[in-house]
Every structure is written in structure tokens, then in C-alpha cells.
Image 1 (cartoon, rainbow, N blue to C red):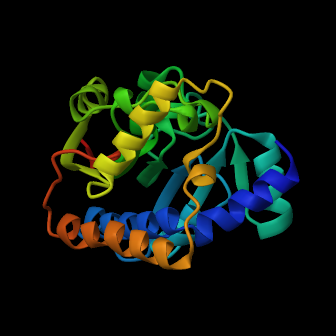
Image 2: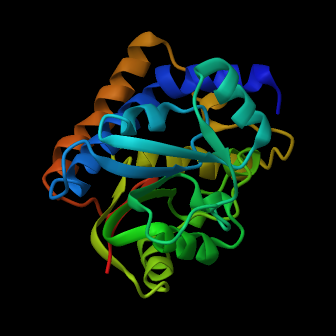
Length: 250
């Protein structure tokens, strides 16, 4: 990766309708997760921070330790955001056991070959009664060039991801739901159509393919964001393009 890529992704994380709506949903879920904890004094670990937008959001709730595997990304964050970031792997976190009140991984675990080891590390560094919140892409039948270009190993179902979390035997699930529900059918149809065309050379991310005008982008943002009101009140969606879950360490 080069600095131009990270500059483009930096803008994408803060201006694209999907990222903006997702960020509001994530912030709402974090508020739910920590509602029984102490205000802004939390010690938070954010794994796989990309260009830092989620860490900036999480800083509203406490002291954030940012972890990123990619050395070029770490360099970008230090030079452009003056953000402290720890270069490390999710499967070998350089922290002691029971250090954090909250561990977050937003669309990260699908990048990890040994996902069970990553979950084990997350629970290890969590304090007893500490909370976690994870999101992942959903359904392997939605696999596309977007997954290839983003170096995903897999997508998950509710069953497969909940089973993964329960394998640690120390994580208790409090809430889970699919999200990006309203756009599920259009996205699934588009990806199925692309597979039928068999354009193996068309390796692009969804963000490159779906470039609407400002009006369309605002409409998509508003539609996606309507899900926030339901998720806020603990209402789960039966399917969606993504999946989220949170809970605590026993």
C-alpha cells in the first residue's frame, strides 16, 4: 500500500455514505454496551483501526489504544493524524491479561486467518465483566471482488460467528443482529449478476463500483441510517450485509 491509498481511504472513511451511516450505528451500539460502566473513564482497545475514524469516535468514551497490523497504515496515522498506534497482530496482542474495559473490532476478524485465536486474544485482554463489540461481513454467498481486494478470509452467518465467540467459553453474548438490512436484496442481486457475468478481471471494491451522485448518496445514507433507530431499541434484523454482536467477559 502507498500513501495515496491511505489518503483516499481516509476520505472514504469520513465522507462515504456507507461509512458515515455505519459510524453512527456503531456509536449508538457502543453507548448501549457501556451504559452500565463508568462514564468516560474507560480503557478501550480498538483493533484494526484503518485510518483512525473509529478510534476518534471511541475517544468520546474513554482512553483508546489503537492497534493496526499494517506498518504503512501505522506510519500514515502517526504522520497525518499524530495518532498513537501500536503495530501488532490481533492473534498476538502485546498487552497483559485483563487490561481493558472494552475491546472493539469493526470489520477486522474476517481478515484474520486464525479467527479463533483472535477471539481468544480479545477475551484475554478484557477485564472480568469487560465488554466487547465486533462487526463482520455476512454470508459467504455474498462473496465478491470486494472481499478479494480487501483480503478477507471469509464472511459469517449469525450461527457461525456466535459459535466462534462461544468457543472461548468466557464470552457471554448480550445482543446480536444483522444490519445493512434494507439494501441487502439490491446488493445480493448485484453481486449475483456480477458472478453470472464471470468478469474475473473486474476486481474492485464496492466503494469503487457504487458511485452515485450526491442525491443518491444522501438517499442511501438516510435509508441505511433508519436501521439505527431499531437497533438502538434492541430490535434485531433477520438478515443483512453485515453482522454485529456485543457482550461481556464472564
